[in-house]
Amino acid sequence: LVYYGPAFLQNLGNDSAIKRLSVLAEIYRSSRELWPSSVSKVGNNVTIRIDMIKALSISDMQEAAVKGDVWMLVKHNETEAFVERGSRRKLNKMVANQQKFQVLDLGCVYAYDDTMALGGRARSSAA
Image (cartoon, rainbow, N blue to C red; front, side, top):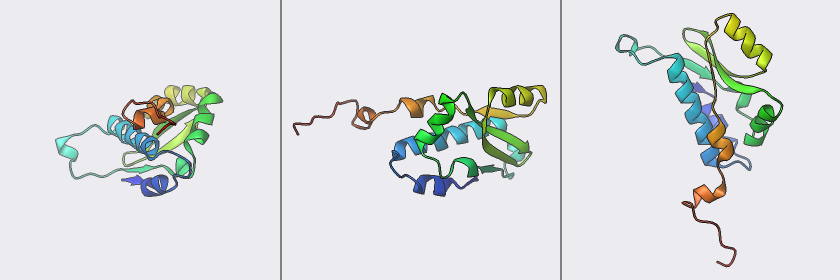
């Protein structure tokens, strides 16, 4: 369960829906890394909390990267993880403490532009 997933999508503002869906897809991918599929755990559930980003725009999220921070999914226990913003110092402490986390790879979101939405064709202002 991605807690606040619907709220994240509903808060589009000026963001592209595709970009927001890409962020959610990366959160799901990272979740699967923290909780690999297993036949013995087929009935188990986990909760992924995205409180920290639910009201942020894509540009707000990009600003973190410009300041040298990363967005990551941090496993807090066997059934719960949170999306958090972290500095390099925080990452180093987490590695030293052997805490489980995944850095969210949002590069595809940042590289996306409206040209891709048009199937690779450039917009024509003469249309």
